[in-house]
Amino acid sequence: MPCGARESDRFMYTQKTRNISVTVTPIYLEDQSEPDEDHYVWAYQVRIENDSMETVQLRSRHWRITDANGLVQEVRGAGVVGEQPVLEPGESFEYTSGTPLNAPSGIMVGSYEMQTVEGDLIEVGIPAFSLDSPHQVIRPN
Image (cartoon, rainbow, N blue to C red):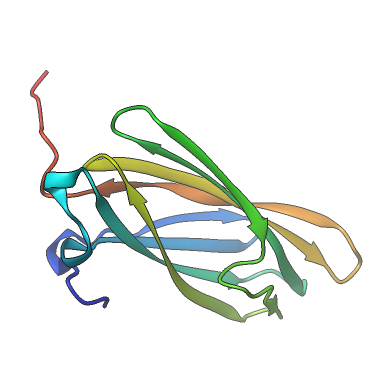
């Protein structure tokens, strides 16, 4: 677990598309955040499992990040953490990345573009997951 992470706040979010599962665990990084300066940082651990009968390669990613103030950021790029992993049937790939926000909470959601050996493209959903810090103000309805 990253240094400064809060173990008690760990939740896992999973989504399956065509027998490819994506599980995300967000972690608030207290030691990298500066709440007095509206700077909040999260790591997120991702596990991609290929339970299909096809070999697939992760080609690109697309993230939509919305903070508690309603600011939306779109992030697109090739692969993940500098890699475009190939997953044979039954294999998995894990990586950790992160994101800063100018608000104490937010939501991320996205997709990976995968390609089969035959050249077919598959859009694999990344589940929506909550970015929560202990600094968010909770208002009852």
